[in-house]
Amino acid sequence: MLRIVISDTSTLILFHKIEHLSLLKKVYGELTTTPEIAEEFGEELPKWIKVESVSDKKYQNFLETQVDLGEASAIALAKEFDNNTLLLLDDLKARKLALKLNLKITGTLGIIHKAKQMGIIGKVKPLIDLLLETDFRISNRIVEEILILNNENTRH
Image (cartoon, rainbow, N blue to C red; front, side, top):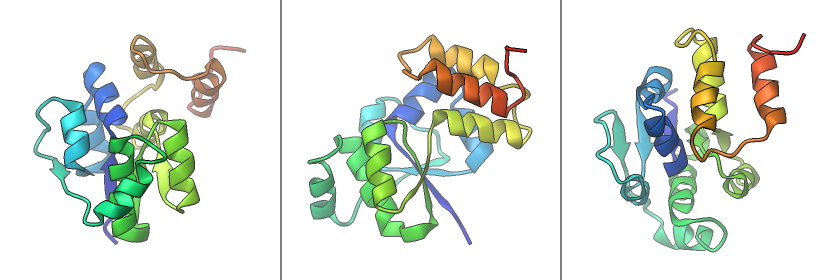
């Protein structure tokens, strides 16, 4: 069963900022996004990121009353593919909405964790350190949990 991975803007921007956009390709192979997200991203997307429009614009417009345009388009597109999708979302409000709609989600830290599990990267900490130099907001507790989960905790 082919899984479709749909990315929101924040995930693309963060991995682009830390110069690890190709990590998404290594973890998922191919990504799908929407024209709205491609525009928000503002850079040329690599060929392995497919751009697909949402068919049900009314549903997307309804979602836009709850989350921003890019997130609404990603969630609407994911619903069109039904249960065969994974949404890459970092925004808490959008994540809560996606979960209410029974969509599978992960975020930037989840992607980094998966990359380590797959043996694509050796350690999560260097990438997390790069993320923390950007405007990525995450609690110290969650960073610590990810480090512990990957046997990279700094406390003894």
